[in-house]
Length: 588
Image (tube, rainbow, N blue to C red; front, side, top):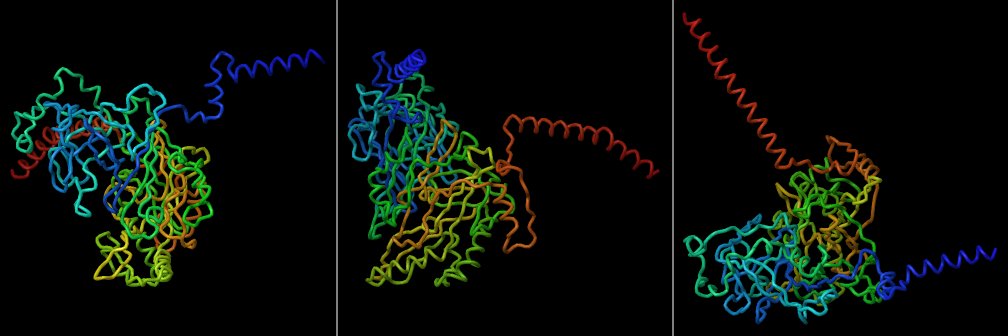
């Protein structure tokens, strides 16, 4: 009996020795017991975001020596970092290249990046980014305590652009550069070209690059390939920051402006870590949990959907529903080209057929039956995003104002987006509920003819190509972009409410559902189409549209070319001579 007790005591001592670490490393080992394995000691950066409705969200960086304050559009739909280098259309502030003593630009490397609308051309440069004691930037760099927080990063200095920079709001530009947070695959590498010997580029350089930058050019023998990375790639290479980030977009909600008088937006971007409590202190959440403007929030509950391919943040939608009724005949229609999450795009874009069914449902089931704003039904330009809709004149009575906002939002339904789950063992899908507080975009309280009126824009638009979930969609949730694990996570947002009225539902992550049961339930209760061809699919993954790779496309092309060749051979050497012989025979 004593021997058994001694053996048990010995085993306990061995376990304690391994856990506590009696080899003079006990501090690190003990600390690791209180940390999640997914949260190692790695540096991270937190940026404060600002914005104006329809203009996107921008972050602030400090570049050059002495440092210049630069505002960059946060864009998850591209991967290049570019800054205006001179006075361009809709740009009244830009990076002053001649004032930075640390700027180096190449006279042989040009970048030209095209977007869905517009393009820019720039010189490939490198300069010092300063992360030290900035009011709108917080860096926690535990790996490099003894090193400087100024690092050299690569970017393009834009000297020519078309339809990139938006028209001014409040008589000044809000941002004058773009920071792409997409995958390296989307990164457009610089191309070799001699700027000074090409008249096409030289005539666009209104500043004298040759005289002002000749002493700061890159050495031609410098290995540029080592610098051709995205912003996240460069931070990962220099500081070992994880290639993941969290995006919290708060729109023009009550959190930003309790009186709803301004049109300013705010948000947070964290790179390297994704913990929501780093952006939104847990004490604030706890103290305000009973407040109707803060949703019931559990920051640890994150639901992930896989990224289909490492280029855009492409995901797979499985359904789109209102009141448990599907608006989709075949879920492949949602992903026909691709479905991407793009913070650089404001609205949500749906395939035109699905968009039309969505509008029809809202008009029939909500505007006609539940809304007092019947005149909105005939405002076609509102539904297609061309015009805003403004509520009647506001009387100086807060109750009347809140009541009108409540009635207006109640004229629109909650929309359910379903996505495939990263953990798809049980054919489960992720359900995301989108409130009209997001997709009927609040533009602010606008004074017109001495009348103060709340104005709105419909933020779901039709497209003939890609399904795009823009910043309106992202404002509904806290979103995690995890490049390392190829997944995107969603959890509830603490700042997505535009009204204190508890009767207006909030956007939320609705958890997991069994996809097969949901699909059968929906398909048996269609409401306004008689001739529907329901496609029963075996898995949510079947909602993806197969797109052949370039190698397979080449194989198909070779096979097609071979068939055309043999067909033309038969025509020329057999059918044509036969036709001639028959014609001669019948003529005779």
